[in-house]
Every structure is written in structure tokens, then in C-alpha cells.
Length: 60
Image (cartoon, rainbow, N blue to C red):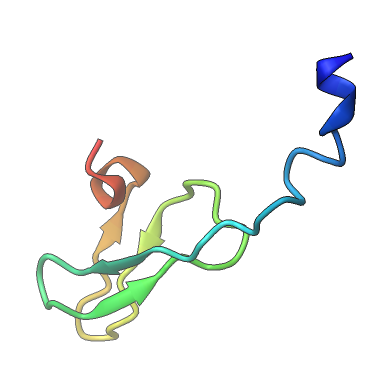
């Protein structure tokens, strides 16, 4: 009975916040796209383009 009270959808209570990261090579700041689920992300600086894994970005 306790579970039924608050079950309006697990992901509808609050949208995930965008996380902001800074490239370790060129210091360019970039954020995770909406709906990011840990896929590798590339630095948006065209002169850099370093690829980051989820572990590198989240420090895990």
C-alpha cells in the first residue's frame, strides 16, 4: 500500500539536471545533453575533440 501512494512514474518527479564538465586538456566547459545516460562525450572544441568516458566525466 505504501508503494502505491507515490507511484506517479519514477522519472516524472524532477528532470535530471544537466552536468557541466571542463575538458582536462583545453579547459573548455561543456554540459551533458538532455537524456544523457553515460555515453562517451567529446570535447566540443574543434581544436581538441578529446573523448571522455562516463567514468572520466563523473570521476568514478
